[in-house]
Amino acid sequence: MAYDLRIYRVGPEPDFALPITEDEWKTAVTAIDGVRIVDHPVLKSEQLPSWANLELYNQRNLDAEIFLPEKRVWRAIIHWRRDDAVFNADALRMRTAFLALFGKGSSVDTQDPVWKVVSRLAEKLGAVIEGDDGERYDLHTGALMPESQFCRM
View (cartoon, rainbow, N blue to C red):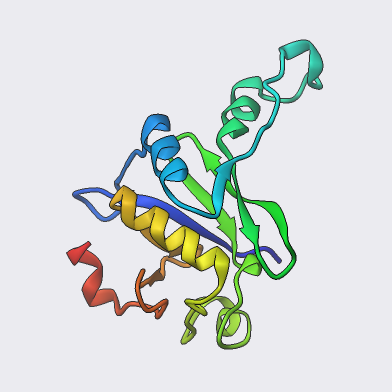
């Protein structure tokens, strides 16, 4: 089962996110070493199946790939979604077993190349990293944040 982490900007109310614009995303990605926009071709409607949403596909043109030095390859890991970005937790080396079953009591290996990039992106964008279950990670330590600190973001 996939478990995603999201880079997004917290709004003034708990369930309200402030959008990250395309220009802000591009600027942040190009300013950080080890990450780049994936060179996806932009498609025309006749190139997609009838059920596919052309607008949603082409916005993925802002997906980002991260350089993995141990493997010496670029991998598309961060998926752009109109006003935020997501990546799968499997891309990270976790200090305990798979987010200790979905996010409880775990922390991220801050030396992981994926974490280094996503935490810098979040910091540059004034954003947070949050899991599917609503847990948030400290951008500097990789540790889960107590819920009492959420409002300070």
